[in-house]
Length: 92
Image 1 (cartoon, rainbow, N blue to C red):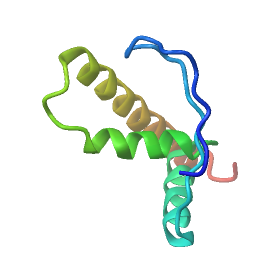
Image 2: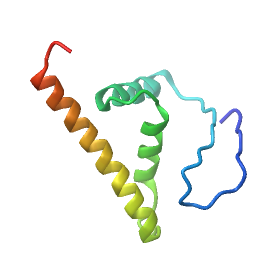
Image 3: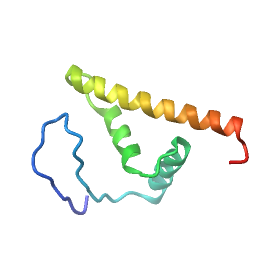
Image 4: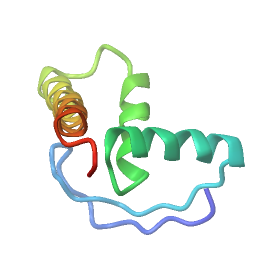
């Protein structure tokens, strides 16, 4: 991590975001970009966040677990909808 811009402290369930800078190998960045394109996202941040969420310990509280599960569900639904769109409208 090179730099970090911190926002004021917020509750854990807040949707506030913090911008950070990280250094990655070109291979790792290419892998993240491939995932981003496959899932149809414009930002690398959501991909990195989802990967990190998968590494969190199982002991996290139920509310947080449900929030992460909902995010994963939305990601999978988005991927499914993009796949269906590509099947129905291959020229787009």
